[in-house]
Image 1 (spheres, helix red, strand yellow):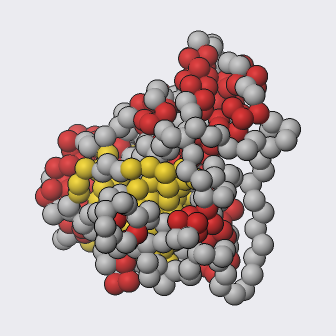
Image 2 (tube, helix red, strand yellow):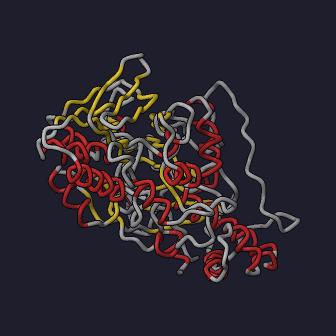
Image 3 (tube, one colour):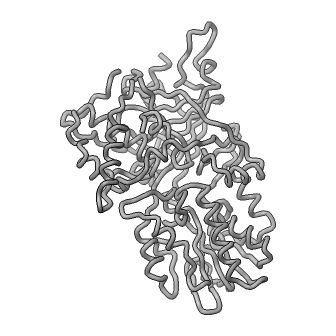
Length: 480
């Protein structure tokens, strides 16, 4: 696994981060242990480090704190197996099916995994049902709407029940004139998958190949060259984990494969690779991620930047469907002949069969129940599979202060790199794993992952903004 591949990896379809290859390493903590994450100092008034202007607009996600998501996407946790995902996708008494990225064996945690899972569940139901039956689909995200579209096209009576007042699930395209383009709070990048690409094309959602320059800066603004220390240690840990009879965490695999013997500077760079590579890819820390996770495969996946409005995909799928929005299902009752849905309003919906396409985090919560209890194989899958935390923050500034001028005469910093996407990271521990400059307008997209995402999700907007602006301090020197 090359350091460029790992660090330029997409965030499971949400965003992409990269580290550059450039001599000096970060200053390690005195003990040689990873430096602690900075603590938050909430303040009710807007503030920013010297040389960093306040943004003129901000949009953010908070998927872990969202009661209808409870996380961003699935990852390969310790104990996760393809068999668990297969078990979850099996029908229950030929009355209830599950769908979503958590059910996908080939592409968990991705849009294409959700899409294919929804369609497969619908086709499985069609094989067992009578024409014209009434089918309830719980969840109007990509998986649920894909399933509902197949069923309605096959002549079934379909009702989609959605907890939110909007459709789309974790696809959330926000219109905000301040940014000059749709603000994607869910996936910003998509994998180059044939089935997904066809749907994007049919929905007139524009995408483009994404390539970028990269910069990693020290706290004083110095551009650093990132050594291969971190990716090399991760590759050795993966090899060690694959050779074990029992699944072990990435943290255990790193220790057992010799990472603990790295010098302090090497340990610091390893932590940097985990914070800016592993955590954005998985949404989780090294103690939770399986050492068998194919980080190289995730990193080398070809991804495209969404330049259109991703929600046009779900809008197209939902066209002509009966969608009951603002109706949260709290209980699914399964009998020999029917399926009953209990709503938070106290109302009920009856159907012959149902497809449950809600996020795994919702299935794991006390807010969603089944009667009778699910079969042991399904419940084990729900209990063992895990969801990672990842958020995006979009910041609009009056000028692109982080962009460097070039030697070309007459070029300003904003002009010099306006058309060149950049991936920006800092070597010191921070709330934001990395920043994406898409080029053009002075807009930065911050990627926040794992424990930092869960921490910042709880903050009000102003305190959140103050916290993430601190992470831009190394780029203040670009202006000087």
